[in-house]
Amino acid sequence: MQRKECLRAVYPQLEQCLVVTIMGAVAVELQGLGHRPNFFYLQHAMGLASSLGLGLALGLPEQKVVVLDGDGSLLMNLGTLSTMARSAPRNLVHVVFDNRSYLSAGNSPTATAAGADLEGIARASGIPRAVSARNVEEFRAAFLSALDAGQLTTLVAHVDTSGPSDWLTDLGLLENRFQFARYCRSLVQR
Image (cartoon, rainbow, N blue to C red; front, side, top):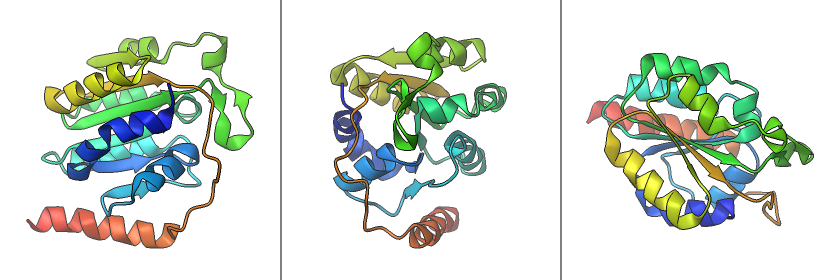
């Protein structure tokens, strides 16, 4: 299954969520589907998208928050799972695209290539709902279920190691930062 196909399958539902992505392929592929002001591309901070998403979910409890993470990124900050579980925000969906590779940083294998089980680690960390998907239909169904569940969820999507053909985007990261902050402020002012 390709990550881009997963993103395409749930893209319409992301319109009403705050979305935080990790660096690299996830950010490029989501931008390729169409940028929205509620999307924040956390470049140059590998491992921290889940932490930022947790803060947003706790600070804006009425707003659905979706983190689009990767296996390499999550493995760099595994403590985030137990921290998320301790707070257990009901409005946070943590998607982890597991391609068994640090694709955006040279394509070397991650621990999941040697058998590490991120769904199992999430469950053992106390995440109330931890599920996996191995095809686009499973992914879409699990994602929609997670959005509706009102319970912290980690969804591990097992994807192939393909990435975008062009890694360049036309969105200025500094402008994205300010645009996303303005969007979040507008939610508080409603």
